[in-house]
Image 1 (cartoon, one colour):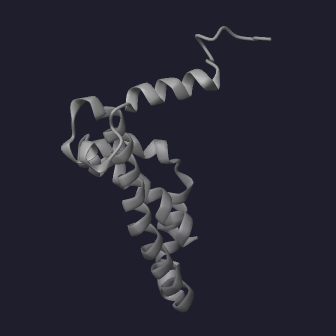
Image 2 (tube, one colour; image 1 turned 90 degrees about the vertical axis):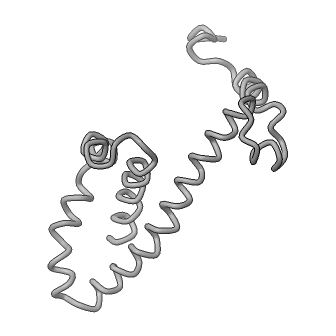
Length: 124
């Protein structure tokens, strides 16, 4: 029983077939490291995972460190509280226009948005 045509919401099997077709021939480190044109789909996934991983590696320890410092020093906590409340209240997607103006359209913009999200969630 289909509520919508498969063009709008395809079956999960069709989605997995498309993913397999797009990443076909890209298995193995040699194909990924050579950055072949046929492996473009896999390269984009690995690039995105790298950015998320880097933001977690930077954001979690720095959020924990500043959170501990804020817990130990009331003066430090009171200094960071207004900034934290402001940054945490703004949705991640709302930072995109400002990040593009600051950093352009490169990977640094994506890293800023991810770091902003991770850091303030860990800090508070």
